[in-house]
Amino acid sequence: MAKTLIIGSRGSELALWQANFVKSELEKVGVKTKLNIIKTTGDKNQDIQFSAIQGQGFFTKEIEEALLKKKIDLAVHSYKDLPTTPVKGLVVAAVSYREDPTELILIRKECVDNRMKLSLKRNPVVGTSSTRRRVQLVAFRPDVQIKELRGNVPTRIQKLRDKMYDAIVVAAAGVERLGIDVSEFHSEKLSPQEFVPAPAQGVLGLQIREGDKAIAEILQKINHPEVEEVVSIERKIFNLFRGGCNLPLGIYCEKHRDEDDKPVFKAWAAYSNTDNAFPRYFCFETRKPENWPEKVADKIRTETHASVFITRDVRDDDFFSRALKANGYKVSGKAFIEFKPIAFGRPNPTDWIFFSSKHAVKFFFEQKPDTGTSKIGVIGKATSTTLRQYGKRADFIGYSTDTRLTGKQFASLVKSGTVLFPQAKDSMRTVQQQFVNKYQVKDLPVYETIQKPVADTPDADIMLFTSPSNVEAFFEKKKINSSQKVIAMGDATAHTLKQAGVASVYLVPSFDEIGLLQAIFSI
Image (cartoon, rainbow, N blue to C red; front, top):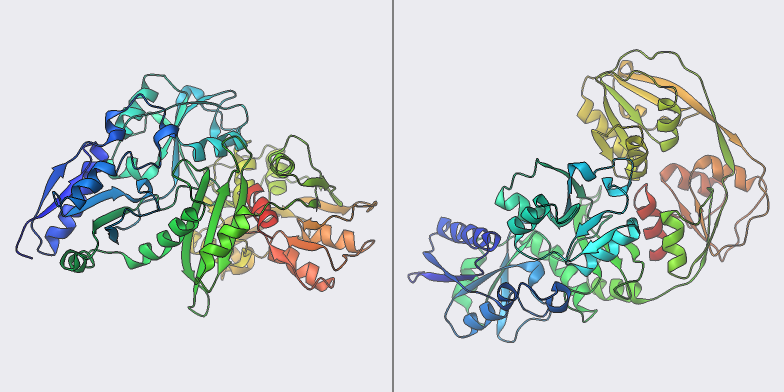
């Protein structure tokens, strides 16, 4: 292409990084470029509450007008800022790689409490301007006070530094792209499967005039089709709600391949009916993406009220119960097993300690062992959270509900190191079995499981079993009727249910509270 391509961008530090990144990518394929900085309404009106303007094109309108008037040839946007209903005459012709899509919570160190969810002290003041972030924050931590936060990424971080907030939430992508040093704060990345980000978060959208074939052809040289595929699904689902970016809906999609090398799509969502409602959480999977966004959107929109029984004791104030009751579900629960500690002596030092359950963490650390310099691995966020209550942090977290896969991943990480496995007396040892060299594995029974009498349980619409032992105890006295839907926490629990004659079993997508809720809301 002989002529110089004019790239339009906002003037913020992050927007300029994005525009210069695209400029560099184009120059690598031989295209001459120059930048044209355009100030948008969102940049000019810093005093307007963000929720009132978000999603209305306040950060894109002037740039798009310049594109339509041929003052620029290409607009570079943070794709999540673009309204999902395209402007007539304009198209997104290419997308960038996807930077880390997670949300990042930055906390002033004097406001940290590692025993609490999100590591925030009680009654914290948290800065964010996103309704989506706000509803998810308040769901996790009802004591959080939300305070409006405006400005570019460096400005927001300076406001935290100036103690205007105890913590702020920003997109990790912005911090990482600008290379900002945030070591003065306590920082935590929030899993996109748990704290669901905006559609296309971490991706740049390259917008041109419709029908400009020459530029479209050039942009294909720097396009990322695999990213384009999943963010198109995210934005399509969002678009079906006919809302702007202020809609309290997070969507995140991934594509991977199964054992037969066939594509599998997974989508996570968090949605609130209103700005103040408790979100519902979803996880969907398909091998046929055609018309899938429509099906996902229909499921998210549909409000279902059912009764749920879980095989553990429940409290009215726990996250699981609050989420279900706030959305019209009836919740009850009872554990059919109890746990008895097993005393152990001083274990020999190992390179790693691995916990497959929060009970193993509890009964191990209550005996105050010396863990020395051992690194720690766990299965699931729930086990990781329990670990933090004892002042420890996991060096490895296995997120898969397939414990064999987690075992293989962990064994690959450990290599030739030794591992101590605090566990139940009759553990199935699935993770240990993935180690080729058995000398590496040191089993340490720290508790045993004892069945309790199974009293009458309500005939709930949804039965959620948390362990094989609970399944065995339940089926000694009770049965499942054909109208009840059954959810299993993990492959071992599902296997035990099928052995008990349950033909259809749903699996939780993850071993934590969010995973339980995603299974229930998505059925």
